[in-house]
Image 1: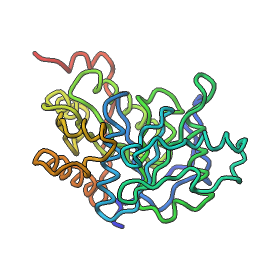
Image 2 (image 1 turned 120 degrees about the horizontal axis):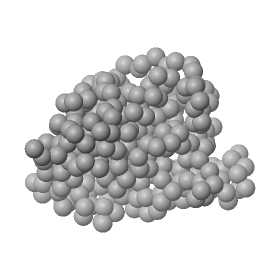
Image 3 (image 1 turned 45 degrees about the vertical axis):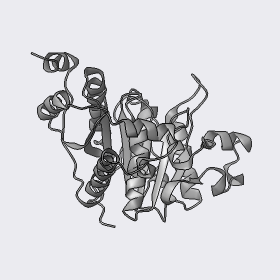
Image 4 (image 1 turned 90 degrees about the vertical axis):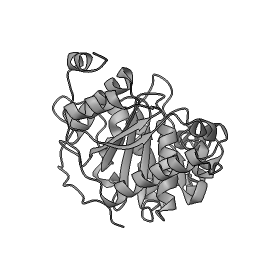
Length: 298
């Protein structure tokens, strides 16, 4: 399929003193290119993930998107509905996973993209890492990953704990979605720190930055230059993107006006890059004080 060269995996835990959910070796995703999409809450990760999934499918790839958010809205522009979550369907059979069929939790979306919403534990009572683990375990038990070329994890909010970071245990690359503002870049810096920690023991590496909802990228560029990152795609604040979500569809289903076609081409370019020439990016997070001093206008 032309997936970028795999990196060696160090069979170890998550570091001294870690309280994170560890990856069961039997649950590794083999064969597919696995991408985890992270970024500040509300920055447009689900829109980015769904349109990127659609772009991969346009390139002839067999795509699986996994939404990792309790509000389970990652895939609704692909499926045109709010599909039941893995946790919902497990609860319906009293958590006897052997009673489930693939059609109970996997739903076909636009252009054949397969969609799953993992959901989340009840508020304040569980860990998102457990939910991610159960989702991947179900996929492997039903052999649903064997015919998949690309897996995209759309992950809730910022990386602040082991649960949110769990998809990084499966991913080859992490794409960080950010806007051209301080809060988004501050969150990106935290995500870089999480990937740096995970990369010591897992195959995940930084894939690059997706600038979103921003006409300018001067602050992103300044940060990238300082830490050693590269912006792979730039999506300006185009109203057609907002309207596509309101219409419950991907950007590829919108009327092909010049601005829509431009966005479509940018997503296709990003998909090709990830398939044909993705390479690990090396970056070290800044201290909080350094970000305050770096960003802003002179």
